[in-house]
Length: 520
Ligand code: SIN
Image 1 (spheres, helix red, strand yellow):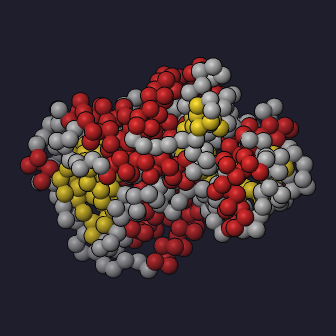
Image 2 (cartoon, rainbow, N blue to C red):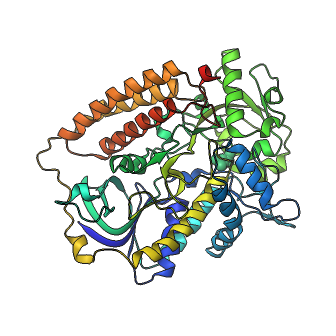
Image 3 (cartoon, helix red, strand yellow):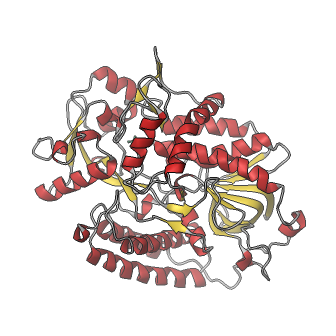
């Protein structure tokens, strides 16, 4: 099935869903096509525990404090203008979220506000430790109420459609995307007047990540092939406290809000250590805490450090952190009595597709919002819980800008129908899955070993060479075999890894999450 639409939104986390909703509400006459790689709920947003950093308590907090915290966490690389408007537009975006039916925890004074690393005030609006899930569900029901949004689940981005895919150069724009339908493995052409990438990050590049399986950098990979500018990929944020994978088989996040409520980090011998690294102790910014843990692990040759929550009352743990409590208990750890074994895990891409203040990339007709974008808000290290805020603010700004842009699209619907279908004739059967599995494991091992929290010049050079080899291998497979979801996503992962390493090699300062030990 080939499709034509007004607006194509790729990705159904908070950024994509809210952009589609904002646009659909203002343009009931327009058709918006929204695609999700898996079930609509399976996004990074769903797993966000902390919440949204937004100033609501103007007695104890202020825009100026939130801006200063964001700039400090970003280690000198934030764009101050972006920081200013994102922080100031936060309360209005929160109001809209509430009006769409998303609920947050309250107490007698108003919102119950959490605190996380790098924040000088309690300002995280949250719903227990399931904020992302709550937001995702609220947005999904709002989206279903809008008849002009067409949802295609189990469709994954393969490539953006640009002049390169047409017989001759036309308008130098993005004309939609080729996407693979996971149910029948057919590549479908979705021609669109404008396209929004909201495809999230690429935590799956690493062996241990808090991100779900779908976080393979598809938007980044497709943008890279379309020659769209991508910036600051070297800034990969590791969350300091993921439950040690030996405890539950995969990497489960233990929210920073637990440290905000008083939990302490202890080394394998049971001693606190954070004050040796930063006066803010447990609530230093994430880059600093993750590096401190990394150093403690290496010093003691241990596999984990402890997160001791025993100073937090039973009531607070049960009321505010029920998911963490249940998950730990399900693997035999009772946080009310036992320390939790934790390690840092790849969590968030601070860099991404470069956009202006309205989410526009440098390819006309293409927008990027949410984690796949680089807006200038996060600099070298994102302040905790600023990501959902950024997603909402840029979703709204992009939707408004799209309203302007749609009035001046340089072609009509008949041009969209003339855009060619995907060409896959002549390909032979897909490479065996096990070969692709092996390449993915190799990639994750290279990234984890050489491109983690502490890097070295030699390690980055090795990683560059090795990902170059994987790049060649995957291109050979891609050019000769029928496309599958696995092949398409692995191709993206390798492209993103290679570019990330290149950007890390070419960045000469240690800033935020990017730290090369030899450059110290
Ligand atoms: C957390 O709850 O610690 C994660 C929130 C975030 O990544 O901003």
